[in-house]
Image (cartoon, rainbow, N blue to C red; front, side, top):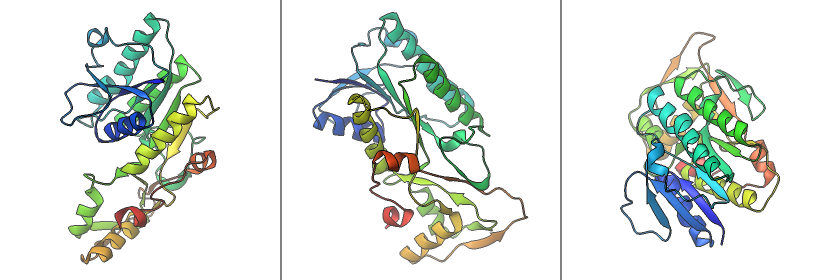
Length: 275
């Protein structure tokens, strides 16, 4: 039976662990606090930010999936949970001369482009935020360890429990209309689907690219998204803000590489997901 180590067992990690276990993989999840629901896989309580806490972590895994959820969005938290913790786990495996493949969850925040341009895996990653720089540093740490590791960069995650845009639409807030400010999203279920898809590709020995950008098929102006949600729910439309030429427009994320590999989105657009 194939052994998989899942580091992080929040909403997405838990759903992924259940899906992997249902397909017959032996899953061990590492988590700081006990789960509140019964599961059909092993759970190891440990703090990956502390090397002493993972001294007894087994190393006989073919795949490590890193899908942690920071409690706070600040430089210190991200540096500890991504760069330092990833280094801790890599060193732990190195001490036992083990080198499993990794599937590492990163973010499209590693792209600093902000004028509405399209980005993909070949676009320069020049993060504008400190948290984005921490994620990029962790990616590079993995690439230095092995060219067999794989990174997946998720855009903005929405779905059950992630209703920020829906709440914003309900509030009829003022929204940037001109120049268009682009929104990139991926449904929570597609996050699980992408990770399951890539995990099985890695375990099958398929030759993968080092990085995949995971976002739905339809980057769209935030104005269009919020107006559509408002119309769907009978809310008043937001107020339109017209800003100066040259104002920030975010970027548009292309999922072409992931689709060409064979992944089919459960929710290809925000209309499918929010409906």
